[in-house]
Amino acid sequence: MRAHATAAVHEWLVEKMPTDVRQAIDRIRSADDVAYLAVMPDVHRADDVCVGLALATRRLIYPSAVGGDIGCGMLAVAFDAGGEIFQEEANARAVLQALGDMIPCHRQAVGSTPSKLPPSLLAESLSDPRLDHERNRDGRVQLGTLGRGNHFVELQVDADERLWLMLHSGSRGIGQRISAHHLRNATTMESGLPALDSQTAEGRAYLHDAGWAVKYASESRMAMARAATGALQKLFNIEADWSTLIHGDHNHVRHEEHFGEMMFVHRKGALPASIGEAGVIPGSMGTYSFHVLGRGCENALKSSSHGAGRAMRRGEARDRIRPRELRRQLKGVWFDDRLTTALCEEAPAAYKNVRQVMRAQRDLTKVIRELRPLLVYKGK
Image 1 (tube, rainbow, N blue to C red):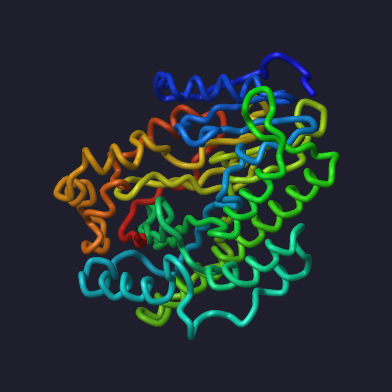
Image 2: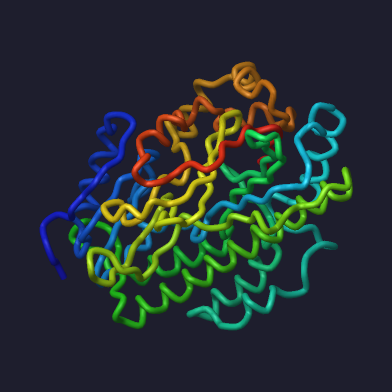
């Protein structure tokens, strides 16, 4: 099917778009059934479809416009305490040790693995018995684990020096397997991108399984948040204030109304930003992050950036940023210095300037809180 030559596109940019990113944007813009495209200021190159996009179709589903980490998102919650506990190195080291013990990066330890997934994740079967098998095996042992790359647990303070937890994670291996399974069933369109028809069994199966992956990622973040807040309660006798919870994802496809019609909105690294909708936009290790409320900008498909966005590919960052430079950029932020070399690819300089990103999208979100990092836990 082909509804038009090119989609209507709106862009919020902080810099001239690199040639390879522009080419990727033009490709998805001209893809079958893509009606609207919004380019966020954190846009950067990724396989097939860039990160930092929201696009709307009327019928076709593009799994690559969601990505493999279905349901990847952010969580934030405040404590009834300030950040002064991190003035002591011993306290910071104790927190890093506790987070490492309670929030594995890859899979739960044998003694910590639940016998089965929570009932909410077992209420329905996935679309293929092989996916159900992987859900009950790998999905079970990876629930509540962080993953690699730019996933993290961070402790921060706001302008009033109140302590906050921020967490970024996704659907782990099971999300990747769901995506790969349905891409094998997709039809390669004229654009070269694989698509599924939402009105077929294959399309409905993807939507069902992707919806499940969003729930899985949400449950996993909550498990890690409970572990992290429990660790601080045990170490310092401080409590999380769960009434402050902000929780959502930025990799999904949803059936939403835009421009007077129901469409499938794909977000890949794009935060939902309807009027008054709360969200979290992280910077990078060593830079400020932001709590925001959406402004409901229709031309942006009621979306915004999901973070600062990469300025360097990982390989480039590893080649250009040395451990000494990483330590300089992270001055004042506690982290596991045994991982210094491995974390160079996640250095602040590998990301765009988050304040420029926020200025570029002032008509998409309203900043309600700025947060300064004190401690970051990442895994490798």
